[in-house]
Image 1 (cartoon, helix red, strand yellow):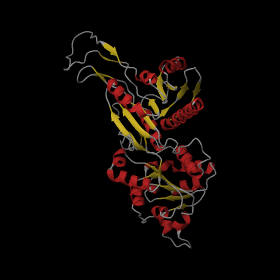
Image 2 (image 1 turned 120 degrees about the vertical axis):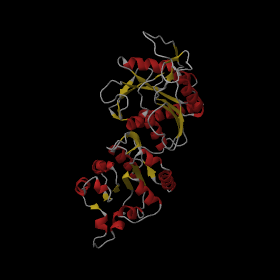
Image 3 (image 1 turned 90 degrees about the vertical axis):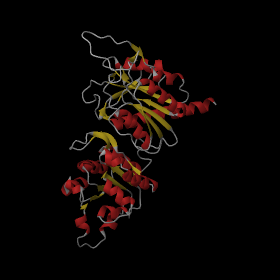
Amino acid sequence: MLVIVGGSMAAVKAPSVLRRLREGGVSVNVIATRAALAFITELSLSTAADGPVGTDAAWFSPRPDALHLTLAKVDAAVIVGASAELLAGAAHGHANELALATLLSVPGPVLWVPAMNAAMWHNRAVQANVARLRDWGHHFLGPEVGSFGTRGEGAGIGRMAEPEDIAAAVLKLLAPAAVSDSKGRDLDGLHVVVSAGPTREYLDPVRFISNPSSGKMGFAVAMEARDRGARVTLVTGPVNLPGPSGMAVVRINSALELRDAVVQAAQDADIVVMTAAVADYRAAELKGEKQAKVAGDVSIHLTPNPDILAELGQNKGERVLVGFAMETHAGVERAAAKAARKNADFILLNYPTQEGTAFGGDDNQVTLVRADGSHQDWPRASKRQVARQLLNEALRVRDLRVREQRTTD
């Protein structure tokens, strides 16, 4: 296996990737680009790989072999912390550095794990290069939504996938039958609809009722489904996240808008995942002008919003329907009752007040709850890992339903 480490802050995670691959029985060749060595040392990579690291300096030093051809004698290649520069070079056949020259000679599959800021990732040139490489059969893992960098980039799409996810994807490339829990194209041909983020229920043109949902969980589900081959429709409330590429993104504000968009998209959906934090109530009367501040208490007449999950459950058909629930106590009992009442196949229950899994975080800890009260506690993990487990379970439910239908017919 060839591991190329790109020039990104995420290069510091490369030793962890190398160790996980070696623990999985994979022999690795390593190349560090010039830019990568600005973030991590050659010694760190060499120690994790238990072998020498290919560099441009070594490439141009006297040696008996052609280093780029020697390093290319592998079954597959993965580019960890792939930069826009590496993507551009590979998409246009450049060979001006060891990493790119070696990639031209790798006979097996190539997996790109990008890491860059959101603006760069969404640039038309970068997306054109990604599309070209995809057309050539190259694979992509991520990028993901989350915080990254140290210079105020904040959060958005562009964060590199976690080392354990990279290792799992590499093992999938090397031995497709050996890693049944990792990502493949098992959602090919399916339509997955995901709702994400909060809703805003305006009281007047400038004031609204909302909640602090970041949308990261829903975005993670949408990107996981996309990467596994699904056609994805993401319906999202107002969040500070750019729309992921490779899917239809519908932006909404209110619960009524969310309801209309999800019901429309769900008509031909195979899996619907409702992660959105939908406001339970809206103003009974929306004021057309900003209301002036008055002395004393103010009463606001609220009216219930539609129960979107229940409406989808009433007309579920063959679709798999997944909901989310947030509770501070008696969570399993309430989630089970919710699943039964709304005809959901299962509910993912989380506790937003629990340390490390509050609104806006990159991790989550959930309990899968079914209508009969049976439940499974999942360990704390990144939201992308939770998304993977969620879709694994949704696919299992769908496959079981299809088999039962065939038996009935």
